Image 1 (cartoon, helix red, strand yellow):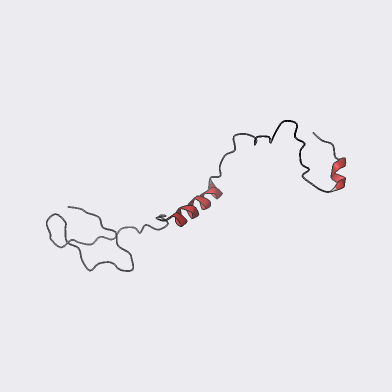
Image 2 (spheres, rainbow, N blue to C red):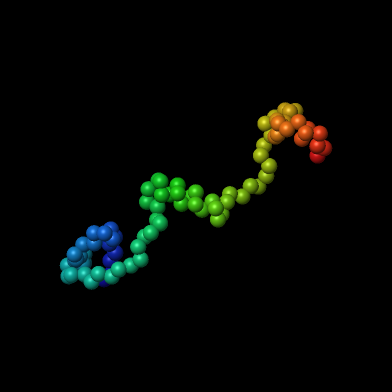
Length: 86
């Protein structure tokens, strides 16, 4: 019978008994669960890192603050005020 137990890599048990028959189980080492976020900080780190490869997609322009509201200037350089508006 196969069964699975997870133990820290720094402190594995000396041995484990089979839960079904009680015989000494043979230890098989699997791949470690590296980078699997088990706490909130790790999940936040994973989500933040993922945005570099898969950023959120914008489906439209942001909503206007109100109709007839004057737009705030994006620059304070007076020379930019002479540029044509589109």
